[in-house]
Image (cartoon, rainbow, N blue to C red; front, top):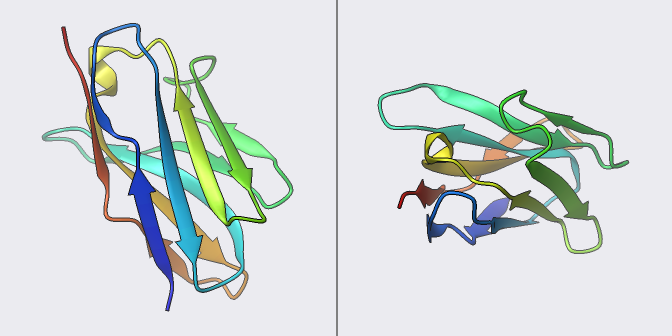
Length: 114
């Protein structure tokens, strides 16, 4: 059974940094990544990373967020820097198995506020 367990969310002030982690188990994964959903808004793609390390970012986070992964640990990370209040959202990781199925984490709250 596929499981994704996230950690690292919390409350930070504008300009500070935070790192999210998502440990996946139960399969071999190709693409992994992060989405976020702000209050009253839809879910938006934040960043993705392939098993080979190719990355893709939303324009709103380019230059501030960095996605990485440890394939040996099946873990994907999201390093978030220069955080802004508009980054406040529930962040959810996802992982697509090599068989094509998609799995989601439970979500972790990130709040950026002074």
